[in-house]
Length: 238
Image (tube, rainbow, N blue to C red; front, top):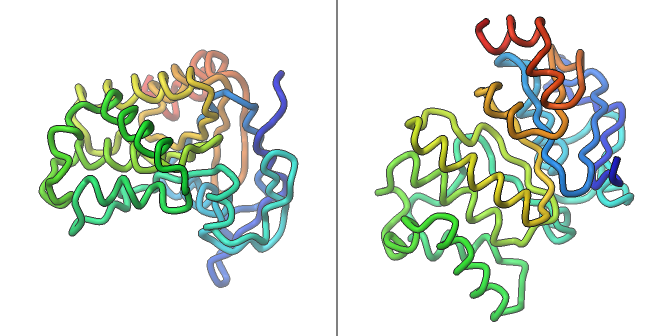
């Protein structure tokens, strides 16, 4: 197995008196796709937010490229090469697509590289080029999700965290999003994916974890979990 770009050990997060994560352990190998599946309220979003330093960690360790990042600020984590496309997209609805994409690169100073990456996003999502000077709030849900992924990629991440990228989208848009994620992975970006469409997530994933009530209860390759009777019954509706 390749070297982990991300190592999470004993991760605990509390919301006041409520224990949201009870000691999560997971790894993302370099240049691989790891899926995190589970029911609503299992702690998937909390896990991503804790890893990207949007939430305070009560206990445990998060290492990125072998370096402890558990106490860093979120912008410091971005500067090291981690990007987070959050649930609900988190784009700036009153700004244009161009402005949103520029904000994705706000820590970068390589103008030529930024322009080249902008062109890369247009190849991945041609509709964004057509809409580049539109205000983001006028986009469809699918277009907003494409923008959220493209904006995260504008920071040129080594690791991309994605929270529910297919939620509420039409089937053809879901297909396009997952095709792009496959292309991004093939280009060498590591992915940690939280996704309610467990079947598509496990098809894409090299490895996967099942989270229940803040704990990892099962892990394996994407193929192993796709074939698991427990997973098929609980998450694939079979």
